[in-house]
Length: 206
Image (cartoon, rainbow, N blue to C red; front, side, top):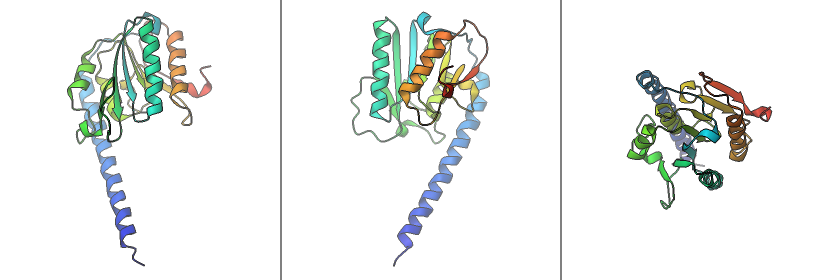
């Protein structure tokens, strides 16, 4: 029995894992160097008072896209100005989406977004930025870290400077659960808290 194809496949997977780890480490190193030069005045903003909202999200799963688009519709009914940017962690078979997006092909070797859509998004002085991703996604965290938004909400990440409010939830919970937590805490938010905080959404918003 020829075991070489199996051994070769395992070796390739091991090499790819090492390279991916190296890219992640370089990404975090460069981000930590860039952020001290990126100074933006922040203040807490509740959803009701936000007129302009930037939405980042992981668009890899079609079910999550549906959740985000329903949320966008509810915001637009309230006359909120919404700008979206979705990230596909896969190859795209179809580019026909109503929202601006990018994929893995548009990242540099250090996993940083390198396209006009990302630059345009970071330059927008949103009242509120929300990353509707249930977990930390490096390219989206990178954009949030460079954003000029007054207040940024997103999933828990070790790079705490990416968001002003981070929400941590159970791995088994989906995007609908995460969105409920986001809305819950944005309703409870006190104006001008003046500091970053992390809340544990695993407690059901209690």
